Length: 495
Image (cartoon, rainbow, N blue to C red; front, top):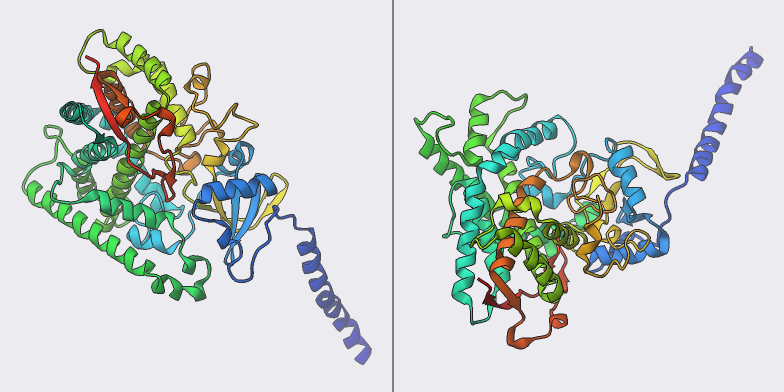
């Protein structure tokens, strides 16, 4: 009987011996991407530096286009090549379509009730569908054409009043984009509310690093350095503003039937969607706020930043400005303003904007993703729960893809089919795949219209006969790359 017991026990003993061997064997044969050396506790957090896209580019040049960092105890995959980006955005797009649960976006977006930071799932699919079908469709974007043209005319007239003196063109562009987004999304401009400072603080928070998100037991550091307080303050200010906007719309629309005979802004449309209640989740007020917040932040900040960088590059490269003016003048045929109908023929203008987006992508480190399962990527093992940072800024400067990548050369796009719609992974200013920016066709018409009309109507130059190469092109790092110093110029009328 004892012998029988031993025979029965033997397989279990063997199994217990094999399990550690199997575990060690699997660990031994894992092939993670190369990693720089890390410190205890903080990992590689210290290597992000004050300018993460540049810091990560330098690290990737040493360790490779797929690089594994550890921010605290969180594994983060850094992608710095078009080939690797294709794997993330196309081959394994579904696996990498979720978002990490970071504390700052959670507080600022009503617990991920927005589109940009919501984790992948049914809620995200529903709210994105609402935005694409009801807010950002081609028909809807076209319906606001008059708003874009009216605000552009106001900008041109404001510049006219400033001719003969030095003025801040950056400030005027921010005001223009803010007014367009306010009118489209909220129904009117809000001169009584100071958006610029709030937007800057919002973007700085989103682009910053929360220690508690990567080292939970050090969350008190965020409190000690005031990060929690600043985040809560910005969230409260935006919420109070958006709550007032929605209440204003509810009161305005009381007793009014929705229909095609009145011009609706985004808040009106979302309130109608809420009233119809045809979606499969509770469409509450926080969802409306989250969607509007995305439209407002994405539409205002990234658009104004792109226009500012384009104008800065043109001031820095007068020969490019002259070539662009030549194209626009030929198409305008003496008219005082350029319209959106003219854009189809403006190939050099489109090349200038593409080159601007290449050198100055609105979000240089695309919004982080997170893997939802284990996957093999270019021969490396990527574990479930790995965060992914795609360095669009570094990919756009890859010497193996771009000739003279640091130079501003719009001509490189004239004979090229490369576009920014997410099909060319060497050029990702708006991301790609399921989580690519849904607002491309909303922001690009603003960029084209404003840039064409400013350059058509005025010659721009640095103050006091400053040399173009002296223009400060340094940036401030955040979720978006802002120009560190405002674009101060003198304008001379051309017409």
